[in-house]
Length: 192
Image (cartoon, rainbow, N blue to C red; front, side, top):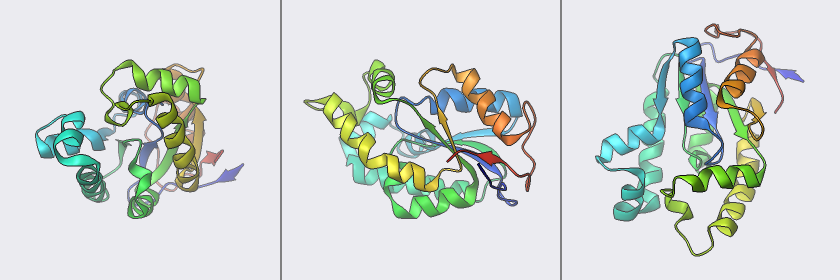
């Protein structure tokens, strides 16, 4: 186990991971428990375009979405401490990895492939799963993204068998401050 101080300037808790990992739900649980403001990069991008994420992909393509995602992340780099929920593909651009590292504690919500795919495919509105073989496509995405998540994560939590509240508590216990705001400079146990 290594110890990693929260960035003294930002000190945000940043959630990364594949679609289906529960980032949005866990972010809401963390926000409730910490009273920190919650930002979701997908919501910021959707608001900018005035469209849903599937509509952005359909009308503008993935490249435009990824560019807007990076702009949203840059905006957040100037934000005070917050809970930041990111899209599953945020790690695909090298620039984003550098920004994520500066924001604060980066938490990789992971899980077994079967659980992640089952959750991700529930809603039916995931643009990257609207393909002939969604299961195979998901497996390829997961395999490509896992090393990127691992390269930027301070903490890794397996969400496969946990409720969203249990994941939030696991994150906060790693912070050593269950139910309280994380303090800048506090050493944090990590498992990444």
